[in-house]
Length: 203
Length: 167
Image (tube, rainbow over all chains, first blue to last red; front, side, top):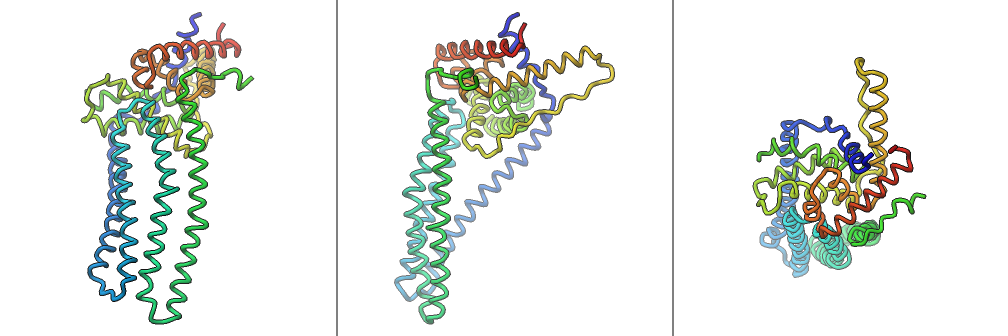
């Protein structure tokens, strides 16, 4: 018996009639694509709306204190950074549609490194700017009354502490875990030598 | 070639390759759908710098790798329900079908024990994709692919023999 032909024959016996018909697939694609486009558009529109709101406030709000202006500037910068990094990541993913597996894996690896850089450098810088901006921005509307100031800064302080000491470390830990796992997998994938241990691992 | 023809020609092949990679019926179906979504979206931009099949299998296998990277799904394996026995089928025929299904599951289980690229390579080889195409899809040399296929097939055959699947 020819074992290679046997393997191919067994392989070909897989049931494939459960796959959707072409028309069903096209309908599914249209819905999926529309959904994806709407989701991406919503994200970009929301980011742009927030940015416009911030910039609009800078021009129209009759602020009297310099702290408000500095606060606004501190919040606009991270918004621009995040928006540009999101657009860059989208275009990078689009360019690699036709890449070979090895190139694609390299891209995944670079993407993982990029995300690590984001968590280690970009995100803290953005968060510092946002936190500073928010604290400075709130000064003008709250500084008239001590009770307003205590409540406003108290709540903002709690939220910032939560973000810095609970939410962010948790997100970084989860990312680190995923990063390590992915790097291990990618190292295995890029190993040119065939060291598969089909038997050794299981016997 | 229009999308309809591409889908009819390649969907079963792509599904089997995804099944070989994931060893999970539902995930393989999802990955097949995702592959054809990408194909549909980029069909107009396909520049024919490579064979259509190379392009399609690249998208499919990159989707498999991406799914692995995301690792969002649980690793619970799902299988298609066994086809119900038809009244006109003889007992002997049913036994043969059952044995075939057992062999297929064993083949998937053996492939699942391989490393990721080896899983992709053997799935494409069993799909009878030419070796130069496999090399272009995976990004390794033809010699490397030939050696890998030989070793993997030897191992799979040995595993089948040990399990008493080949006489």
